Image (tube, rainbow over all chains, first blue to last red; front, side, top):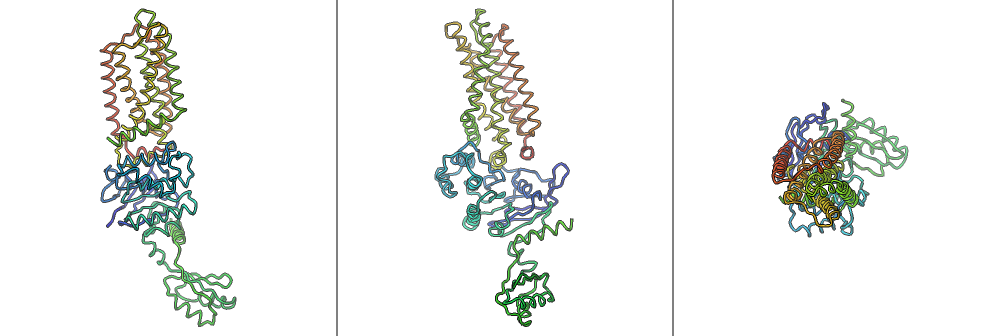
Length: 308
Length: 233
C-alpha cells in the first residue's frame, strides 16, 4: 500500500526550476531515504509533501490526499525539519507539553515522561532548550515529532550535529519505529552510512531529477559487486592482476600490495576464482563486497553531472 | 478552540516571562503615562476633574505601541527562528495559529494599558488630593475599546509579519514607530483641548474596532503556508 506518492512533481522559484518532474512512491512501513547534494531539491520535495509549498505541476499525496488541503491529515504525520521547531525560551517539558496539547495527545503527562526518558533527557526536563547542545535539541526534536504516535514521520537530516552515539540512537529509533510501530519514515539525509543502515528504499535526487530509485539491496547488488583477493605473495598478486584484467565482465582491476580488487559488471565470482587458481596463484582470502551506498551515490551524481 | 488557547497561552507566557521585554514595556508605559501629567493637570485644573481625555488618547496609543512591541516577539521571532515551519505542520489551520497568537499578545499588552490607566489615575488623584477615576464611558474605553484596538493592531501586524519578508517588515516597522510617536504628540495636544469622552464616542470607536477586526480577520484568507515559508529569512 502506497502511503506517499509523488507524480511528475515540478516546482520552481523566481524562474529557476528546482524540481523538474520527479516521480516516486513510498509504501507503508518503508523507511525511505531521499538523497541528493545541497540544492538538489530534497527540502523542496518534502515541503511540497507537507503542504508547505504548492507544486507548479504534478501531484503529491500522503494517504491519498494533498496535505495543503487538509488540516486534519497533519495529525497523522510527525515532522522534524532542519530547524527543530523548539522554542529556546521554553523548557524541554514545556516544549513537549505545547505540542502534546496541539496534537491533543492522550495521557499527556505519561507520554511526555516516556519521551523524555526515551531521548535520555529526563534529567534536563526543566532546563531551557536554549541551553541545550545541538545533539540534545535534535533528540528532543525527534521526541517531539513522535509524541503523538504519527503514522508517517518526515525527518530532515535527523542526525545532523549528533555525536556517533546519538547517531546510533537515531538509527535504532528509526529502525524500531518502522519495525515495531509499522511507521512509514521519510528521511532526507546527507548521511549515506545512516541511510544505508536504516533505509529500505532510496531515491537519489540530482539537479531536480530522480537519478536512481530502488531498494537499497537492489541498488547495491545492481551494477556489479567488488571481489577482493588476498594472495600469499607479490608474485601471485601480479599474476592475479594480469589474469583478472584480461577477463570479460571485469570492469576495473586494482592492486595494493598482496591484495587485488576486481569490480564486476554482473559477472559471477566462481569463474574469477577458478581463473586465479588456474593461473597458479596462492589465495589466502576471497571476499565479495557489494558497492556501498556512498559509491552508488557518487557514481550516480557523477554520471548526472557528466550528462548535464 | 483548544489549539487557539494553547497557542495563546504559550505566547502570553513567553512574553510575560521575558524580563527584559516586560521591563522595557513597563518603563515605556509608566513614562508615557507619566508624560501625560501636564495634560492631566490641565484637564483637572479646568474644574472638570476629568482624566477621560488623557485616558482616551494615551491609553489607546500605549496599547497600540505595546501591540507593536510584543508582535515582533511572537510573529517575527517565530519566523526568523524558523519554528513557524514546524507549527505550520501541526493540525492547526492558519487562521487558528493567527488567532491564537493575536490573543496571546493582546492579553499582556492589555495588562500594561491597565497599568498605564492606573498611573494616570494615580497622578491625577495625587494632584487633586482625591481619588479621580475615569467616567463610565472612559472606563468602557479602557476595558473594552482599547483591547479591541490592541487586537486589531496585533492582528494587522501579525498578518503583515507573516505575509512579508524581512526588508518589507523593517520598512513597515519604521512607519509604525513614526506613526506612534506622531499619535502620542497629537493625543497629548488634543487631550487638553476640551475633548469629552461620551457613550457616543465609545460606540463609534467600538464599531470601528469591530469593523477593523473583521477586516483583518477576513484578510487572513490571503495568508498561505507557501508565502510564509518562502519569506523565512
